[in-house]
Length: 236
Image 1 (tube, rainbow, N blue to C red):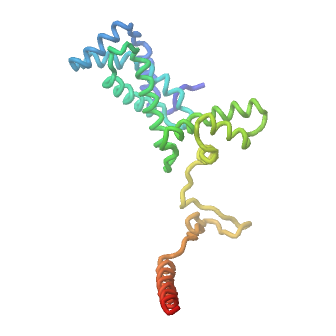
Image 2: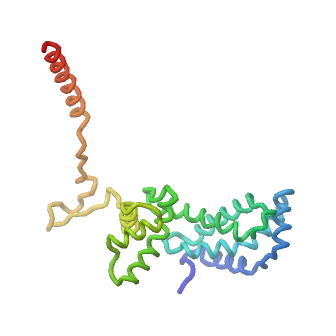
Image 3: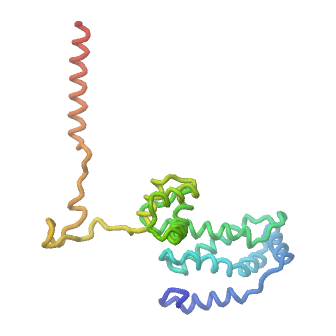
């Protein structure tokens, strides 16, 4: 099984991963010294050593998100941005390991990247929707294995309750995860249907909303009828 995508960058990417994995793991004291040096003195060498030591953490997190169809190299780049953000915000005097703090920033950066590139339509804008996007598959598989049946209404209700969202959100997210984007210029149709070969989806989409002139006529007619009613009521 290949770990990374095929392509001209595979060799350099594998070399980058090997180099990152060979970096020594920092002790708590050394980590504290580097973090202080960067925070108080803006020591670039301290930042480089701190980031280099935890690049392995970026790679480990990226491997968890590669099933979303995005290049591993792009995930690593986004994770490195999160790692640098963590280094810039980390307070070593809170007695928390940098790896624990940086994990959240790395994961958040990669999740935002996945959501931005999954579809042209934004699929997750709230915290609940993001959690639903990344946990729906796992929860659905757990429920289906336990019941031996495809996910039903009760299963969707259980997922909605666990994630603190509505069942309608669960159903919409299922649709988003099961189907990709479809171009309006995609062709369809054959001799066995009412459509011809070469027809495009945009040719058969119908806007059922009233047209502009219909709205104006309706508004004008309403004003006239209202005036008549007002005059009749005034005479009565």
